[in-house]
Length: 177
Image 1 (tube, helix red, strand yellow):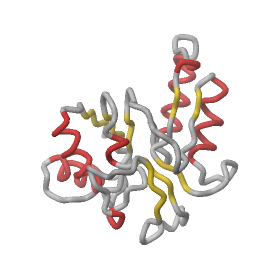
Image 2 (tube, rainbow, N blue to C red; image 1 turned 90 degrees about the vertical axis):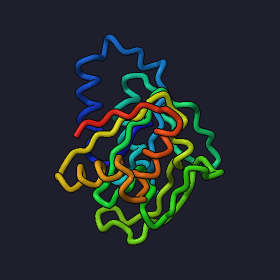
Image 3 (spheres, rainbow, N blue to C red; image 1 turned 180 degrees about the horizontal axis):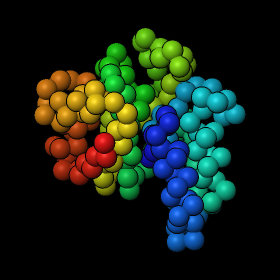
C-alpha cells in the first residue's frame, strides 16, 4: 500500500524509469493508504494519480471502497503529516490499533485547507497487515521531531499508535527522512 500526497509520485516515477524492464508490474497490486472522496479525475484524487502513473506499466491498482477487503501487504509505505497523521488517520479521528474495521470513511477536523474533503482510509489494523513498514518523511525538521518523539513513545498521535502496535507485532519499520 502506498501513500498519497506529494512525496511518493516522483519516487514511483523514478522507480518506473529506472526499473521498467526488471519489475514484473503485472504481478503487483497497489492499494492507496487513503484517498479523498472526490472523482478519480479530480486533481486531489490519490487513486487517479496512482492509476495514471502505474497502470501503464501493468500494475493492478485497487481503489479503496468501504466494502473492500485489504490483503496482507508485502509493504506498507507511509508518509506522515506534521500533526502526526498517517494515511487519513488524523489526531481527531482517534484511530485504534484494534479497530474492527479495516477501512473507514471519515472527516478530518479541521479539514486541511489544501484538501477540504471527506476521506476513506485504511485503519491501523489494515496498515499493520504487512511484512514491513516504510516511512518517507520529506520536508521540515518538525516532522522528523514528531516522528522521533512517536518512536520514543512520548505522545499518542496516530503515528505513535501505529509504531507501538508495529513494535508489539515485530514488524520492521524503516525510515527515510
